[in-house]
Length: 244
Image (cartoon, rainbow, N blue to C red; front, side, top):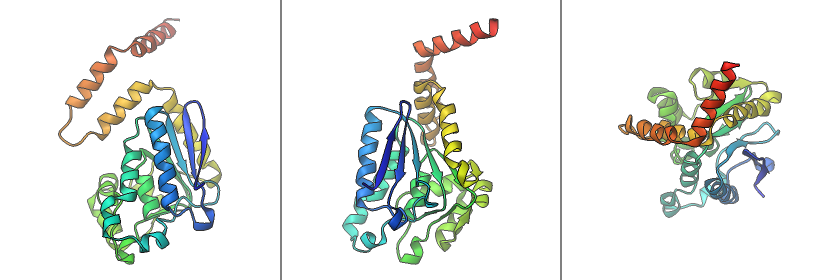
């Protein structure tokens, strides 16, 4: 197995598990993550993606496999389709990044809703140095995350972005010591788990809605939530607690 899966009541922890290949994303990894996405689409839960405790998130796509892919493979969007599916999962996702997140590994992290990393993490898109482009979402997700000018610099040069720069550019929300990474990621998920699942789903849809879709998406989402039993129960509990 290329991905270790830990099931919890409110979340799933998916750990990339190819340490001998620096967690390079190969066909098996893609297949197993697609299978996980199918389960989370049927039974929505929070998702934590991590590279484990080896000091590596994912050092890119598997170059040995990538070298042998042809134009037809490129048009199939093997990694792109997976990362888009992760981005569209019903409930929020968190990437916990330690060490290198390069090429497809960085693009996997970009597909998550929240990224936290260690002080030894770094991100990079070295594809142009290998004669290809960052073809799994970085050319349009990275500009949205860090701005067009910085994204173009990173995409055109293949330069690696260290953790503190990633924090300053708002690519990640927190930088912590390696030993605190998973606890920090789970603490964020713990806070999310306190929220209404439907409110989380609709908030994610509203945030990710294409430009021009607002404010109609927000209004429709709020209308659904205003009529929900969960909203009434949560607000009643809040008012009763405040009245004591």
